[in-house]
Length: 249
Image (cartoon, rainbow, N blue to C red):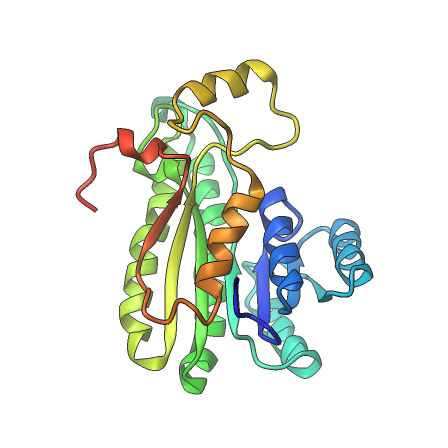
């Protein structure tokens, strides 16, 4: 069981299926959840759901690439809930195209949506964690960072999180802050057709699609007081699919 009671946890991309699952899990374990996203209606609905179940949550609607909005959000969180203990970076934008037809704009957008917000938010929140000698940063990436046909820009952006996670872990290790990455595999999400699901399952050793809750459980471990000796790691939640890849990392 996660030990996150009374910890202040900022979760970005909170209204997608994985972000919502993380919010529910941490709130259910006693954390004070700050749900961050760009859609006011969806985020208010999520917070209302959590608080109706006796969880503690607040909403923050910001542009995660806007430095001033990030600063204001941090100040509001500290004022209303206290210092930030946990940061879960959950950003996911996928544009499936072969590299020879990826435009400059599409390439830049992949990084602007998948990597830039993680850098901006972590840069703003990490210093206080280091000063207080406590913090948990979890970056949610994708198995696709290992390379998939038609996902060159997405894989490149997600691969950036691998290097960022390891570098941040080294920079923060002596300050009581851990930084880890959760790489998700094929997830069963709303709108997927049966043909796609069946095709994906054939490549997954456990023969089922992942659920957002599978990712949330891994995030919960890294976010908790049970993982102080784990940092700089990338943890695959993929039903064993990563076994098919030859890796030296």
